[in-house]
Image (cartoon, rainbow, N blue to C red; front, side, top):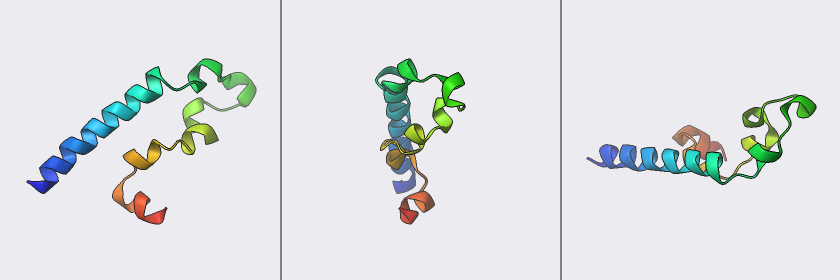
Length: 64
């Protein structure tokens, strides 16, 4: 039962995180892939986004 609740909670967190990225993050509007040479999701901005702490796998959380 606990695993089921954890799965549901993580799915909700993933959905909310994606929604924030798509609708509230300022960087997609200002990011220029051509001048930066990398897509936004591969950039240091996204890699260092605090929302990643919510969506990281258990073993990734333990490393940080």
